Image 1 (cartoon, rainbow, N blue to C red):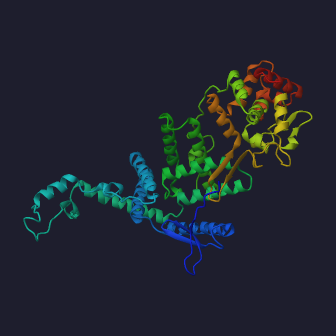
Image 2: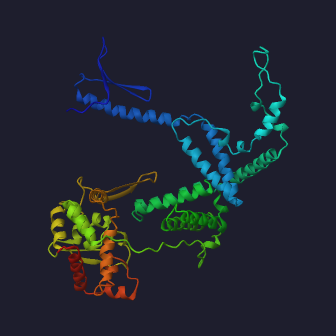
Length: 504
């Protein structure tokens, strides 16, 4: 069946020849039809021109201000100033309320047609004249209707400007807050080193490292996310020179509260505070701040968040066998490489032909994430017969790596765009996701290599080899001993592992 064309053919009339026509966002695109409706070359040229037309229309519309744009900018400015004041003065309740309102307003402002703002959306309007005062004033104004006095002016008390009549505490509060926000705005105008600008510079340096191959795209992404969270928590306009030990301690407390309430895991909160500390140290090294906050000084543990101590989760032997039985040949190979060599997806994707000795039936390499670490061992893994068989069958020809996807590309690929957004593809994870849904086993893929390491640790003959098997740098005397262990001992351990899974 021929593919349906996106544009509509319009027959010619009189001296005008036929043409292709398409409407996009209330704008009409037209292109010559060439020799007629069946002219495929003319249609292809028209389709390419239409794509350019769409880009032009989108660019023009992006420049047009959305409805109520100025109102949203004014409201966001008020709430951001209020947030900055609240953070500086330790008003946690107002800071939390401001952050929530900023997120809400930004979300609404990003809609194609933002709704009008209500008085509750403005920080200053929130401090308006109490309803009881309006009601009292309204009671003193004679009520007339057009039917009683046709030419009379109907007064709506709720629309009167009665600020001069308001001598209540609300008016005093409004005046106080007006002064506070004006002063906060003056501080920000006089302090150009905003958090927004500095985090942007910080991320630019990190992204440059990604492009130079000094930092992985996968590692860059959490740095970006955590830095932006700190910016939103503190306020984009907050001056970095105002970041103090108290600022970081308050942020640390916020993360601990999120952990205790179950909103964040301890490990995630630990990564978040770690990246924020890294950013603040970067500010100091680049002389954006004169002094490093004392909580970041040597020996300080004030911002520590301990890792959650849990028993390592692994697959049972029966679960491993079930996965291997139900997997396709290709997916089975991925699982076997993880069990046999302690690999993760990136290790499998990066495996080179030069690291795979097909005659000896071995793989010799460092883990991908630690290739630049001198203390990390280069390990030779003896492959099980089944792993070797599948690797021979599935290996690529003409590619630098042993395994590639159906398009000839890497199995796992991460890249950041020019604006710093992460894009990633993981064929191994996708294959496993399909398998685990089919067999009803809901455990992460990374548990496979942990399963093999745990089995080695449970065997008195091979205990201490698990670190070497996983490709870790030796941390104990026992592990240092086994780093230099004869290859025969590791070979025996791997053969024993295969026997546990019923694999030769």
